[in-house]
Image 1: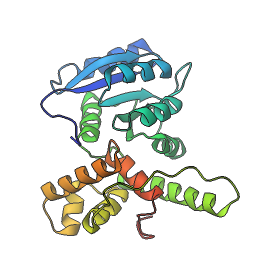
Image 2: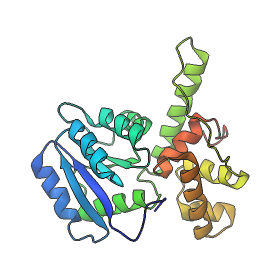
Image 3: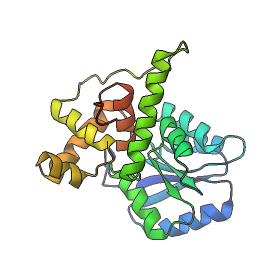
Image 4: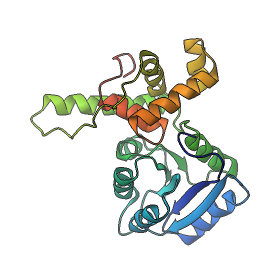
Length: 235
């Protein structure tokens, strides 16, 4: 996992305003020795407070909650704890909403009603640096973000403050890898494209995530887009 110790169980927080939903998710994760639920929140503000207290590796965040919704809570948490991954829990695969969630800092999403295997797989993929977004959706989201960036640059609207470039620049190979990541390619797909081993690609992905100071590959692709590192072809 990108900078997260593999010698201990990953710490998770469940944020949903329905106690039965939290209980169901906790039950699905109960037998996973590498995953530990350390807190439950009934609204966005409680999720923020628990994040400040526990510094979790990942939060499963409901979309709609009282006091503070999932998007607003995600923005605050990612600003304070950029290395905490957030997976949105949603009823529908709505590209427009998912775009806003990814822009806010989410790594991806899992649908309510997912099976135990699907939920656990999504959590583990994000914790290991993979994405829960399929290739087509990832491409659409990144194109949307790039288009918004261009529209802001060409308008009289004040531009959103862009992140600073990494202190240690990406190597040419890492730029190649992040471009393929932005296309939604998995590590095995990238390995085949670059004619290298999956282990080598995984190392590159971990270095990219660390250099950008983000929590996961989805946010690494977002950061690369914001910094203009992606080619026209990738966007």
